Image (tube, rainbow, N blue to C red; front, side):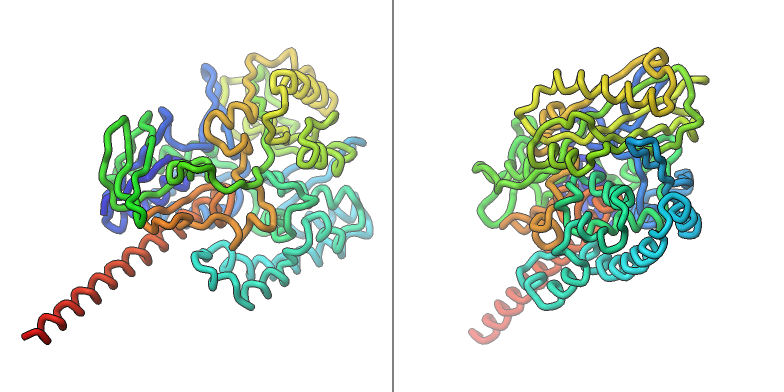
Length: 500
């Protein structure tokens, strides 16, 4: 079959590879000059740093899917982060998070005496919920109403405590507010407010302990080199700087795509743009209104020094964390004292900058809002972040900066991210699991979708899992159509025999 993939994010590329291995002819259309979507590098002279994702989670899932898609993973070098990261509180206290449960127990015993038992209960409960949630909510789709309107699904949602929010759930394990902050901030990885995001997402923090956090030598976006080779070997055609401007449907299925004013016939389509932005290709009316994830202001820095005393991943949390989140998610304003994340990959990877220099990446959660003056906001945020970093151990940082680039939700929106949200649609209760857009979201059943806004959700390994769901749904859809045709032909043959 002739399959058109619109968008070359990780979901589109892996979907295309999986289908190519099944013998389909796959063509990927990418509007930008480079493949990868959010998986990209920011470059300046001899410096480079990841533009988007930096924290590598669920490494075994990631490697398993890459191998299944035909990607040679032998030369991909994973480095385990130990400690996972440091959490810096405004009063100067630093909490170290470890993958090793015994190390973590001792850290809690030293920093927050009396909270050790809560940590052990958290790990035990989350282990059970992960085993329940993975097959039912990560590895399954919800195409039909009966797939989720059933006793089993609702029982699972109850057992996963989906009716609680993440911070409310953490009150059942930790008495100290700082520990709840340290185990709730992970919803920000996918643009969710920990005070409203359902407790299912507490599994992210658990997974950091269970599966670890890793760094890929050369940067997360270096995966694209390996994926490109696999595409070449499996005859997946990639056309960059080639936007698809329209999809033509006969009402039952998509029949053509429009590229450079040329109409091309297609048997199936995989949408990999940010849903629901990409959905506009299928429907001239405004798509359903979704709640976007948070946005972020990103600072990329080249620095004439190496901060070897600083961990690769660090979080700097404002004293009023709940107020911080309320400003971002409810009031849609920039907090007066923003919390932020710092990525310091040069600590373990000398290939990213010239000798004696390094790169830094700062992510500041902000509202996804068109009502923010991003020029003014960027100036304030940059000054606040650099001042805070200098006070927190990045000594003389301003003087050592050789270059700095900034990315805001305004640029994200211009590039097609829904409402400027950096992580797809928000992971709210009614935008998660069976309530999130599925891999066959349109009446045209030969059109599939994959990406951060599609079930099972955001994050590189999870989007790749979504690509597997696309491949499975594709196989089921066309197997069903083939079976229908066989039945029809059989009935016709019987009718002919009867007429004799």
